[in-house]
Image (cartoon, rainbow, N blue to C red):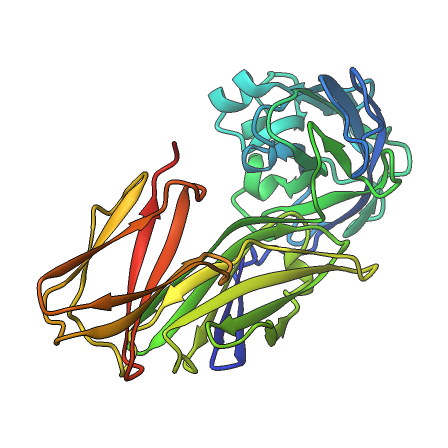
Length: 401
């Protein structure tokens, strides 16, 4: 599932690209244990080193729409976190609730060979190839129950790499999708862990500090007289909402443009993509940041991005070189009149003026030097103001030493 939310001039448009699966299966997924080299597995104290975690699905019922029996209980390929290996847990291989078939374990190699959608347990009739077998029709068709089945257990193994929040997902399918029938009525129901683990919410935090929201990107650009703001995030159910904030170069304080609460079914560690279009850009530089608020009202800020917007007062008569530069830049004034005063302001990405110089230019084709050797590497804006308030702005890159 991916949610795309488009904000146009303060209006929110939401498109949920969720898989339209039938709700055939019900059950609970529990994270029953974890081990690690160190750490308690919480947001404040992530699990580190060699990590192992177990999780078990208890299948409760399966609606047999058009004789579409439960056939697969597995971790889908796309739901295995990067770097994680999934192996068989202590229970799961067992006789079916009804009939003479068996639930067997299919590892990654066999699942690939049989063209199955993931690693886990599938119903087999004795030939070791569950892709051509019927499923388990349980007790009480058409709404089958499975009171005598043991939980279907899995183990995840991970050697610390990128910090991440692990919440196991298990998919339950009917045999119309993964077995011998052609009926597609139950293509798969995703059940997410909701209990167990160090916080008893089915989530394990590993390999470093992780926020309930992970901001993957935040960027913006100017085009056709508007500023486009774009960001991508992954959130869990502790995340509340975004506040998009803005200020321009004539203001000291940020103000809130829009509060954005993402769709409730998009907050379970799934990517969401959001866009905002800002048409109120009369000023030449606009700064944007995200306030990311959790449900307990704690929050963090994103980086600040700056978008340079052409101004109706801008004139083009100077040049800045070399750019990028590591120690000194030169500003050329080819069209200056006799004895004109200019103010040079160097502004960082947060909108703070870090250098301010006043210069007198006598005649055209003059060059003024500006020492930038003591400032940090990064992106800056050089604002050039003339006495009559006309301005020119250059984007400047200071190379790191």
